Length: 136
Image 1 (cartoon, rainbow, N blue to C red):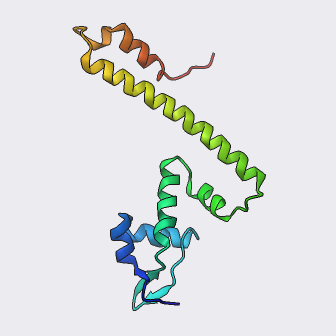
Image 2 (image 1 turned 180 degrees about the horizontal axis):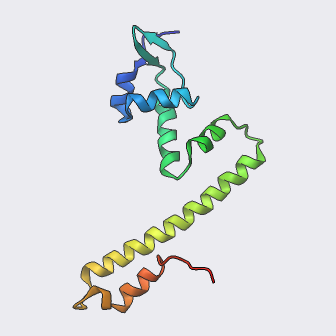
Image 3 (image 1 turned 90 degrees about the vertical axis):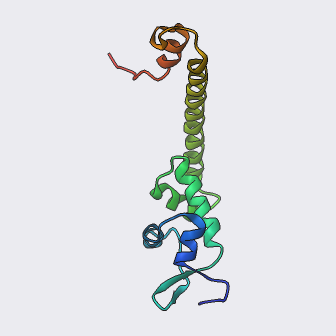
C-alpha cells in the first residue's frame, strides 16, 4: 500500500548511506519490508530508517545478520535471546577494554621519549595485552 510519505529505494539509500543492493538483500532476508513499488522502484515506509539504524548499530556491535533477525523476531519473554544479548554485552565490554588499552598505548607512543618505541617498556607492556594467546 503506497502512501505519499513513502520513500523510494534511492531516497532510503541516500539518507542512510546503504547501497540499494544491500537494501534489497536486507529485504530478501526479511530484515526490512517494502510497501510495494512505484514503477520499478521499491517504496518503503519512513520507519524503515529507524529499522536500518538499528541494523547498522547491531552490526557495528558485532551482531551477525542471523542474530539481528532473531532479535527482531523474538518476543520479550525469549530467555535464550536475553542470555545471548547479555553474552554479547559482555563481549562488547571486553572489546571496549581492549580498545581503551590500545588508545592509551597509542597516546603513550605519541609522546614517548625513548629513541626507539620498540624499546620502551611501557609500550611493550601495552602490546602484551594484544599478544595472541598460545595453548600448551
